[in-house]
Length: 116
Length: 111
Image (cartoon, rainbow over all chains, first blue to last red; front, side):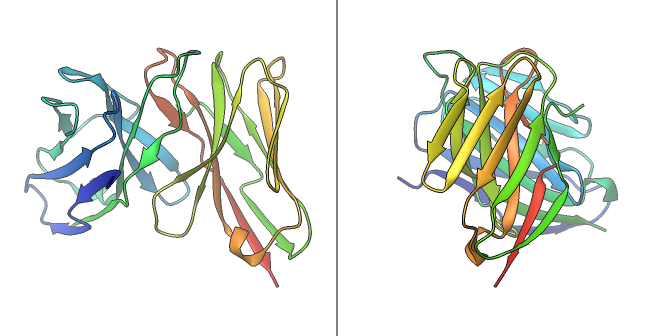
């Protein structure tokens, strides 16, 4: 199993450009999430999905769009990049626990994005 | 706002010493999880403690949970240089549909 994969690993954009960060998992997990990590801020939840066709906003959704057409893929779109979106982006997946809540979450290696 | 908050923000110890970090959270939980992040990499799951458990062990890790105080602690015994990393606690969001993380504790273990 490859686990959670993310592409690209690094990206530099100019202000106003758009792009898509790719995320895929091969563990048949229902739950997938996108986080951004900034120095001193920990991980903040951008968007998440509890299954194919179902997405919802997290703590910091503005400027980002997601869709979940398959169980495996959960791309994150930056609509018009801004310098404030310079960050490290992590995708993660997990399955629901039979006892309620989430089982352990598996993370991708991250995408380092710089917006000039 | 973030659900969990770790304390302290940073911790420096010598090899062989124990490291304790704390997490406070705001809403009800099914379980609480701890993760480790080595510099620049993705997070790795360490341990999960359920809301009806008070203590759990895994190797040199000991986690406690006090649901009445909405707090948890992670103890790493006999620390090694390889334990140098950031540690995060995670709990569910209010809707129970995603995990949210605190800001983390940065642990530095020197030899």
